[in-house]
Amino acid sequence: MSSSSEYVPPKVWVWNKASGGRFANINRPIAGPTHDKELPVGKHPFQLYSLGTPNGQKVTIMFEELLARGYKGAEYDAWLIRIGEGEQFGSGFVAANPNSKIPALVDRSGPKPVRVFESGAILMHLAEKFGEFLPKVGDPVRAECLSWLFWQMGSAPYLGGGFGHFYAYAPTKIEYAIDRFAMETKRQLDVLDRHLAANQYMAGKVYTIADMAIWPWYGALAPAGTPATVVSKLQNDFAAVLKADDVRKSLLDMGFGVIGGTTAELGETIRNDIVRWGKLMKALAQKQG
Image 1 (tube, rainbow, N blue to C red):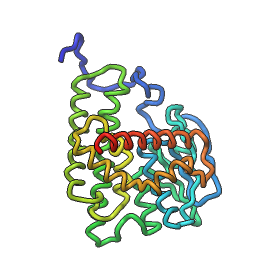
Image 2: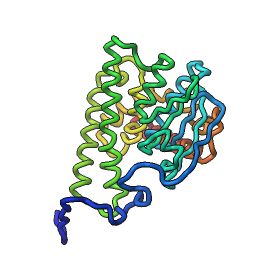
Image 3: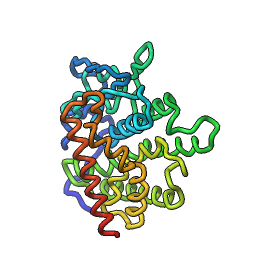
């Protein structure tokens, strides 16, 4: 690998130009709102502000699983946050999540609204509130579940912000960066492959929030040039997580939360993602069958 001009990092970095790339218009080294905009509030107990990204899908799957189990108190309104347009920097959203990342949840089921941000925290909040998909304190399966949940939270940035960014979005292709994060992504898939070879779900025999967190990030990635054993195992295990007649149908039908009157754009995003995933899985199954 060679370069005509070697970059010399400054002793003190200063933000004096746009970073370039697809997200240059929203990248900045400071926090806080850029404009005033209140968040909409619907009629249901939970207000979800999100988008159809892997992190956004985690929470929607959780809500739909709860509703499928008959928890009427889990009804929610889902609102589209267009991160490409900087809506995550509106004053209302920053009040819900000072880190300006989707998803953000406002729990209005009690006497006072409670904000919850970070997808893993939202999954835990809902699991503990409804007593589902997270074993009780003292159960060894709980420790396994939380270990894998936090594994995903800590590992995904290498996949998305690392490999995904330098491979697909960076204004220049950097061989070292792509090789570094491609290697790490392959390693993470091998971690999953080895674990799922001996376990039905991430926490063993029990379907938990760990599965809901891991599938959106790694389930659709499995067909993308990974070893056949990884593809086959992830296909089978995460198809079980989706429960074709349950979550997958709900995601298709609900438009990312028809229960809460979601905007058409958000529904279309989720429909496209799920249809794409379904076609990939169908083609893969036919090829391997």
